[in-house]
Length: 255
Image: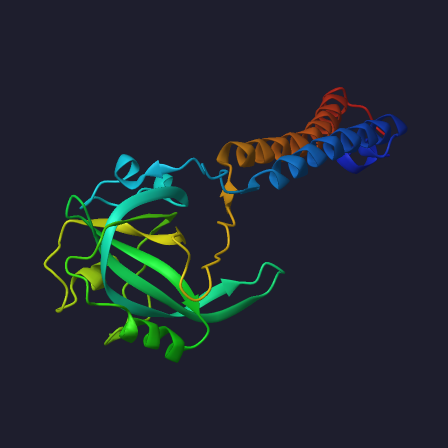
């Protein structure tokens, strides 16, 4: 004969049944925790772009940071082009799921309000084709006639190595600091991928913003909460068994 123990009490049919019920409840809570955990990381696609044509000066200011709400907007600007540059390593989509790497021709320009804007006007497959265009671009007009350009507004890129008319990135800071350009410090923080007038070379085709993964802290908290509930269901069963052992021991029950 011996006093009741946790194991002896827990293996009684009554408490085995209670354990099965506790495990079933814990399983439901665990499934809820898994469901909440899966929702903690969400892929948020890019907000559909507002393709209503607007004037560049209506959504952006010169000498001001580029805002995320300005990206990919369809804009127009009246400007006079001058110098020509080539940007390397430009990925061009072919519309069939593939891509190719080449060069952008970029024209610097001045608006009627004497503001600086960079215009990516076309894509070329080789450096020779792009540089030949820049070298042979008409330079006889003085002053150049203003033209209305329409295209997609994009943020300036991080400055990289440049040599002559060749750049490794389209950086507004680099362009406005070229020694042979007019002194124009009042510049837009982005550049325009020109759609109209017709592009030189091939029209530039870039991909859409792929969106981003967002972590939802509230959903993660719920996942932790359901996990604790699942553990509590088993803990409650164990606590009730232990209380039964204590009660029977206090009563002096012998098995």
